[in-house]
Image 1 (spheres, one colour):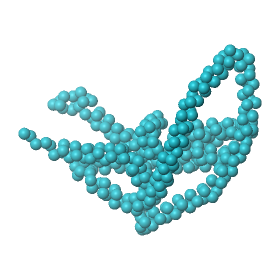
Image 2: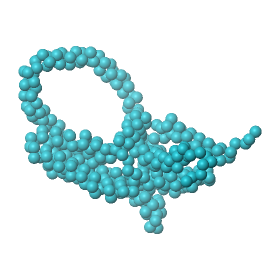
Image 3: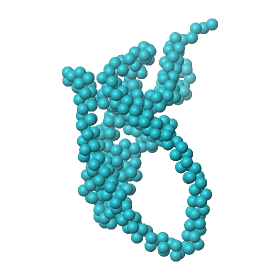
Image 4: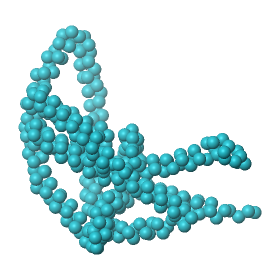
Length: 365
């Protein structure tokens, strides 16, 4: 009986172990979620700590300086940004009845004309709406009852969520301090025959993912500043929050238009009823997108993998559907990693005899 090839056994053990680790992370993702989030934060901020280490400081010093800087930024946002957003939200809540009246004054004549022209259709539409409400009212009441009965469990889940938020920075702190040891430990587990090629692929994935994530976050901060300043200058209600939200939402393709541009246009028109100001709002978002497409992305994302927006959207939908909030966070990095490996697999396939159709004994021309 022929003995199995040791190379095949090594490959099977390596792939099997990797698949087992991934399976455990998926099955117990709720338990490992704080650790994975902390690992992601450590991965994102490692270059800053490594810069301190390269300039003769210890990693612990770099981590402490980073934590202090982040804490100061958080305190500044709480002291300045949050109160301003709260005031704008209160002002928006006070003026909502006025906005409703203005919208009604504009929309109602259109509905009146349509109702006068198509009275039978409008009557049928009202009857269907009333019938639908009656049919769904018991279902709504039942859902409310289930929500009230599950209130205690929801509170417990909220407490666990808060505990997870506390654990995430703790994990990130210790992982940042010991990041070189973590990488060395993971590298030592890779079989020697596959270590070189694996590290080469991981390095390429690291360049793609790190450049993409840090670049997108940097671009989001710039766009958030531009949008917020522009909307506040145009006196758009809740403009500061909308500008910041739209800038951060730019990390998801086209989402800035949904959560930023459309609400800003509606609120600007409801507040001022001025088409020049509405055009100004559109100009702010258009200018920000033009700056992002012609200057920021080519310069900041030049070293990252060019992920197509459709691929990003599919990854986000799949990640959110399968793994919830954690899936949304890891969707784009995983998509970038898959694209890197897929490119190499396609290259191997095109270089193979399966693609060329040549026989095994036929020499290459």
